[in-house]
Image 1 (cartoon, rainbow, N blue to C red):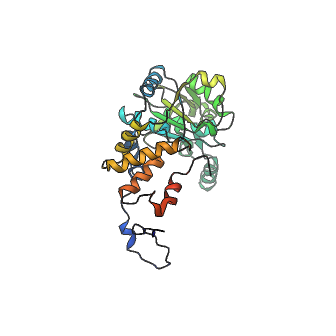
Image 2 (tube, rainbow, N blue to C red):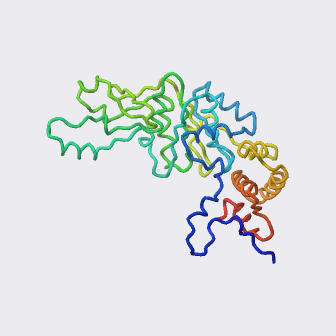
Image 3 (cartoon, rainbow, N blue to C red):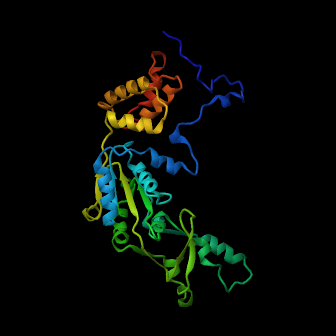
Length: 322
């Protein structure tokens, strides 16, 4: 049996300390670099797999309708939002990652009543409560509906993981383009009529709110992603344009790899893509699993060499098989 090649190991499992070896670690893959420009890089790298993707994005922009994007993991559902925001220069994507506990109010705004109560107990003038604006912050959905001049891009990620009521709760704001901040609506009349500045979700600016109501000026491009884990109510679907992202074929995979990894050994890339496509016929695999394998191969680490085939199997482990 061939001896396993360990030349590339940084961590060797010897229990002996070596503080210098970490300096041999190469630069991270482009998709694992975190900086202020990471959203821009995501937008640059996205490659639509069909003209239908482009058409439906444009239809959503024209009609001011949300776009519900379905498809298997790794087909670029979330990346689409970053691509549109980058190409149209619409600013930073407002991302709302959905869990089973997410509510409409979470997306609209947050109010820290406890902090305000604590501050009120510490201040000298007990008859004058602290300025409420310090304890309010718009959520990603709320910020998207305050845009002026040009729309923002809102990514509602994995909406199929939501509580059963959330899709129906979204219908009102999708149709009417406005919402109420109840804590401001309850203020005395003289305070309601003055504009109250509160922080936006991305802290890009303060937003002036009057009488506790936010009225949409520019309907955002809303991209909601779903892995198909649940069905949605007909009333919700009627208000959305629906796009199913196709699995990338060989041609698209080459384009995707070249957009992420500028210098690629063509032989390595073609071999791994060929193997990946064959594996994908019997396994559910995502495109980033292919990118991971090619990145290692570019550093002279062939995941599918006979002595380390278990590494390749780990990289291309079926998504539905935990």
